[in-house]
Image (cartoon, rainbow, N blue to C red; front, side, top):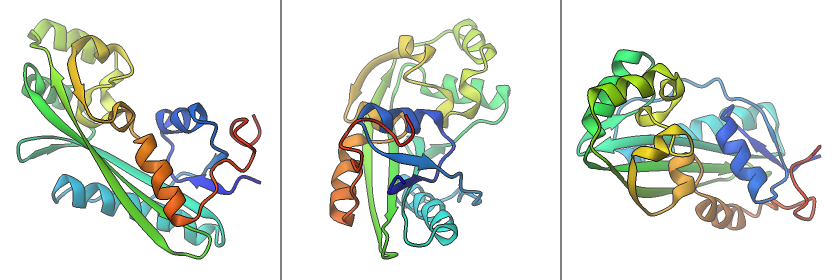
Length: 198
C-alpha cells in the first residue's frame, strides 16, 4: 500500500508526482477553500485543511494537501468559474508579471503537520482580446488558478518563468521532496519505480 495520499483531484498534481516516481494514491478532499488572505497564508491554510480532512478519514497515513493561487499586486486570482471571469483575469495578466504561490501541507502518520510554500514569477506576453477569447473558448482556463495552464495551450503566452515551473503547474517538486523528508515521509516506497499500482 502506498504510504502517501494525495488529497487532490488535480490530474496535474498527480502527473507531477508520477514524474518523480513517487508512490501515492488519490483521495479527494471535500473541504471548502478559503478565499481571503495573502497568497502565502491562503494557500498554506487551504493545503492544511485539505490534508487534515483526508487524514481524519485515513488515520496513520501520510497525506499531502496543496493549493495554488495567482496574484497580481494585491489582487488574488483563483479559479475563474465562468468564461467572463476567465477573460477578465487574462486581460489583467496580459503583458505583465505576476506571482504564483503554491502552499503545501503534509500530515504524517503520527498526525504532525508540516507546511511549506513556493513563489514563482511568471511574465505574460501581451494578448489581444481575440487571442484571449479563442483561448477561453477551448475550456482549458476554467478550472485553473489565474485562468491559464502553463503546461497547456497557455505556454504560448509565457515570456519568462522565474522560480519553480512545477509550482505554477500546481506542485513545487523540490519544495515537496524537502517537506516530505522533514515530515519523515518516504515517498519512494516502491523504490522509485512509479506510483502504486502502475
